[in-house]
Length: 173
Image (cartoon, rainbow, N blue to C red; front, side, top):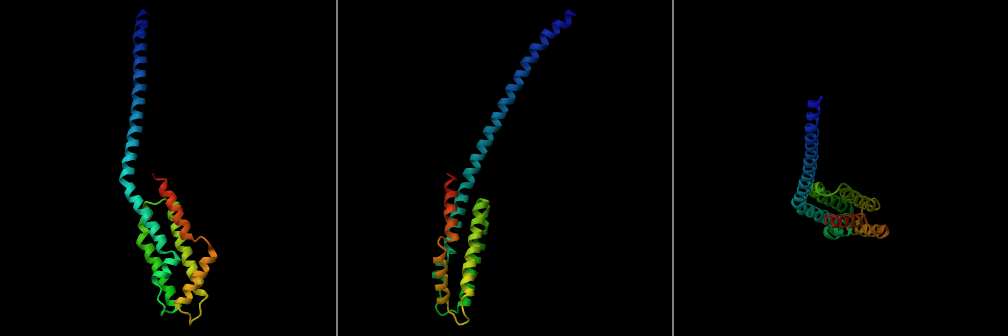
């Protein structure tokens, strides 16, 4: 019985020390993992931040380029029939969007959704104006109708998307 008591007197303190050491080392390793994850996140942020900023810049540029005012002013050809001008406007929107579609990798899901919705709404505005044209209407008639529609709309989807993208970009800093 005395031997068991002596063994217990040695094993219990040794076990307590061993358990305390285990808890201490576990806590240290958890802190180290948290620290390494934090460092990794910082490194990733530093690595991807320039690409993200560029993507937001390009998305804003896309929104500016497909804004109905910009499109009409950039592509207007007075001698073109309205139907052909409408087709050129829609083609320009598709090309601009397709050229920038890869930017969605670095832009948040809601941000890119705003960009896509803005593109679709701009197409709807142009098609709405195009439906009101006659077969003899010219591009200037279509341009005037587009300007009339956007004056009635107030804030355009592309303007809303630009504001959203700017706010989202500010949150990165």
